[in-house]
Length: 117
Image (cartoon, rainbow, N blue to C red; front, side):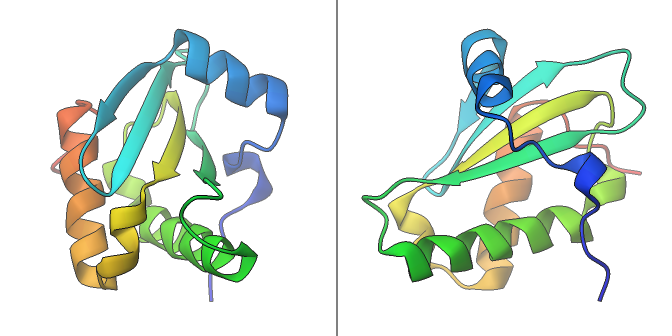
């Protein structure tokens, strides 16, 4: 199993706040994605969040693991010089892994950060 490296993660609250404030947003039923340009970065970084309305801690952590795996599987197809915050919506609970992946790809295409290479 290949795990997402720490260099690819955003954990700091201030960084989340900066991305929320300065980043561009794109959304669909399952996800909200904030994107902030970072031209000096050689690879992307991503932070995940799931609100308490979505479910209890077990449910929220399961969704975050699922989102991490979706990003890990599609690392090469995402624009590298950006920071991302991905928010799961309650509708994600009703979808399986394949439809969640399609939904995430859809919202990343809407944000113009998906590369078809």
